[in-house]
Image (cartoon, helix red, strand yellow):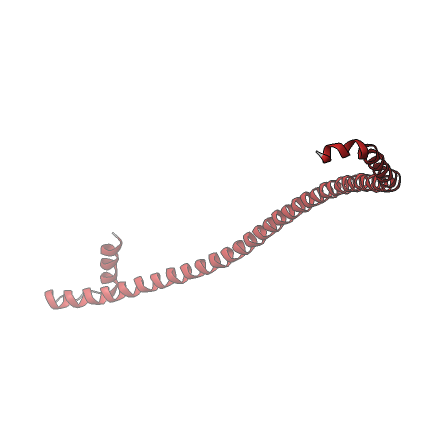
Length: 163
């Protein structure tokens, strides 16, 4: 076979050119491109490391700011609660004072009304007694024909009404 016979003739030159091509690629890639790629990778690693450090510092600052904010918020909430309680107490005191004033005014009106009612009751009782005495005198005069004096009729009506 002719292909197998040519191997011995071309074998040495193929090895030479293969080594020469790989050597050229090694020097171009290994000495020219590889350092640039490695420096880029190092720069990227340094950038990532610095970004992570900045992110950690920002997170720490954010946590500190959040803690301060929560402290201020809790203090503001407590102050608001105290103000609401104070306002409620003041409102309750004002309402109680108004209720006392209104109660005193109503008590005065009630007392005046009771006095008017008492005087009206006394006047009505006096009028009832007078009418009853007149009626008793008329009834006695019609039934028995006897004359009863006004004073006797009033005493008799008072005795019956008041016991």
